[in-house]
Length: 164
Figure (tube, rainbow, N blue to C red):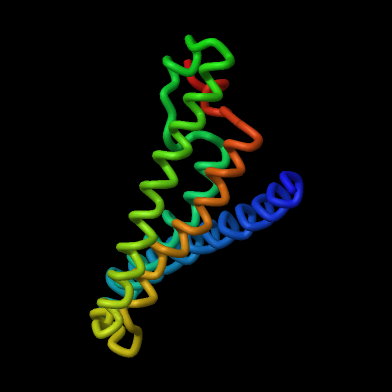
C-alpha cells in the first residue's frame, strides 16, 4: 500500500511540478511580449498583466507539492538536527498534521473563494471567469497533501544538507 501511494505521489508531484514550470515559462514569455508591445510598438497589451498574475498564482500552488515532498516547506531545522531520532519522527508527525490542517483550510476556503469568484471576470479578459484563477488554491492544496504524506512516509530533508 505504501509503495503504491508513493508511486502515485511521485507521478502527481512530477505532473504538478511540470505544470508549475510551464506556468513560469508562460509568464516569462508574456512578460517579454508585454515589454515588446509597450516599449517597442507603444501599444501595450493590458491582458498580459492579468495572465501573468494568473500563471504566477498557478505556478506557486502547483509548486507546493514538490516543496512539501522535499521537506523544504515547513521545517524546524535546529530542533530537527538536535533531536534524537525517535523524537525526529514525532516532530515530523506533528509538522505533517499541522501542515495537513493548514492545507485543509486552504482547500476549504479556496474552493469557497473560487465559487464566489465565478461571477467575476478578469480585468482585461472579460470572457474568463476568476473561478479559474482561484481554483489554484484547492487544486494545489489537494496535490500538496500527497507531497506532505509522501514526505512523512519517506522523509527527505534535503534542505538540511544544503543549509550552512
